[in-house]
Image (cartoon, rainbow, N blue to C red; front, top):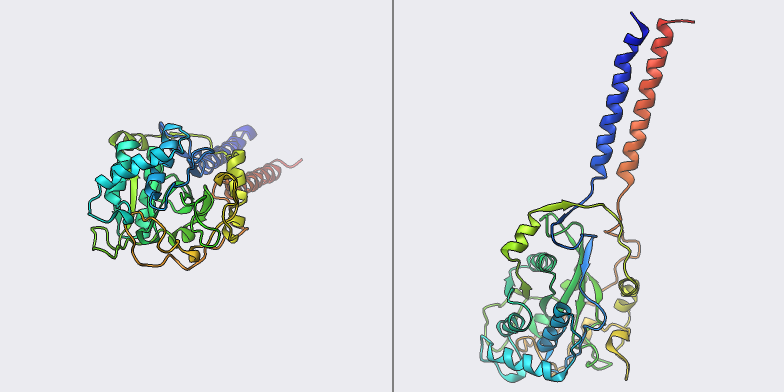
Length: 366
């Protein structure tokens, strides 16, 4: 048999293995998909930016301040006026579902009406049967709409804004994701006392477990409301066009995002924030002041406005602990599988080449 003819099958085998290996490497390193029309998915979303935070002007106006903060984010404003908060509060009081005293502030229906009227008509009241369901729907709608989510904390005694999150996958394109952290803003920052502060500095990062200690089931002692025992939030619901965008994934290159200076500084200080009990200093900007109160400090008794009525239930007593310092960055690409596959391919191709050489040597001795 001609030596070239004998070697051609071996050559074809080597080429086939190399091509197949290349395909596998491409598969392992295949770019992630993002929903068409949405910002590229890089492991998380953070809508917060400098200048959007505002402190509630009275103890009763937490939901009004939240509307102001969300409107600042959505409309690229920097409104911190007392007149604006007064207007929001009065409107929401008129749209409460329940006739609660003015000292009990705004109920979830009134808060929803305010966000729909002043920010975006897509906002809807969401009453979830579990913390997991509430959090998953909140981050998905935040991702699809590009708008923050309002959440009730301390059993409905207070209201925060959820401005961002990180997750193991993009909630816009898959239901197989786990939320690993969130970003929150509480409007009491700048008003609360030094000893009894509840809200953390704006854009604080909390783990999923830490958020659970604040985002608790609704309870109002004055009357049994429709949301009793549920996790209450006000979410920008995805429209048909939002869902259509999510159903049309576009491949993108997988890269590691370089956070901007403000995000990096906030992330670096998160552990310090969660371990420090402090309150804003006199004459300083709320956004520039460091320190984080603990849930055990509770809300100032008899002085704090509620999201929708005083529950009579104390705030969570478990202080959040910072995430472990050795936690893996969910945004970092994993190259271990690709490297192992490449090494395996090199070994296989080398072995086939060696075996082919030995066979040719035995068939045609020198």
